[in-house]
Image: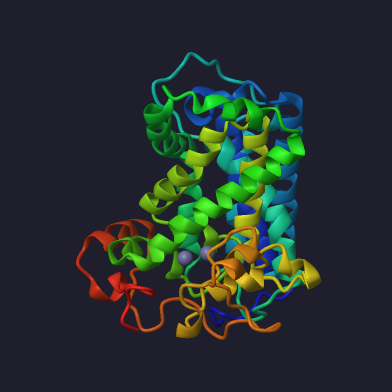
Length: 378
Ligand SMILES: [Zn+2]
Ligand SMILES: [Zn+2]
């Protein structure tokens, strides 16, 4: 079966994949209940509605078994269906939805498996149907040659979310905690909620624009950001492919104005939820029509142009949220209603795999380190 052949509804491959996904989530969920100290985020734990989470867990196991059965009936290979059923059975054997919750005693180290599972469910439910029923690249399967690498990025960014947040916010707080900012924080914190959210998104997008542009035009930085551009198959997972230094550098610069302006905590939570959704949406393989909205909000089409292999589109469309920032700053490129013909780093050899891609920028590699833009000779 060709790797790039699109999965067909009814042949059982989609069912097998869904079964494995929900079987893994079920097993992970049971582990979170059994060992909360090790696998759940202390800040999130206090907010959880446990009876609801047990229902979600039961639902996930049911989906895993149901789709496993569907896959076994329809698919001749049977492997995916059996793996999905096996994972869900293991979850059931360990206690299933009625599993007794372990005690919490303040472990020295934990990973945010709870955040990974909950966001994986939410993102997959939101974006997979869009890509299945309204795809831009119809021939691209969910299981293209790069999805494992992208999934590794998604998993690592979620498991270590607290560490990444500490690394990007800590230095800003350490440097600025003694400044009073002359009443600025109180003034911004006193604005209505909606005004604060809009201001936070605008300021964050401006600073993100600046950092993103630097990552494209400073040759040494481009090596790291080139990791994000190395994918040739855009989908909801592809946006996760970011070098750890790219993530920390960008988040630090974005957090700087958010900290200085003193937005209320609920405003920051809203901003984080919005940017998480919008950044994933921008990479989604969907032709969902934006119509006139595209003038005000970055669409997948606009961000796909940012990933175009065409040199005319290099160093364009830096904004995550507002395309008019790129228009204002002379970096907008998304002709008519067209989509880019090819994506990625054309002619550049780039390794596959999470670890290889993290090491790659440190090694001398003129091809990957080639700057694109103001300081480029191209
Ligand atoms: Zn970029
Ligand atoms: Zn991107």
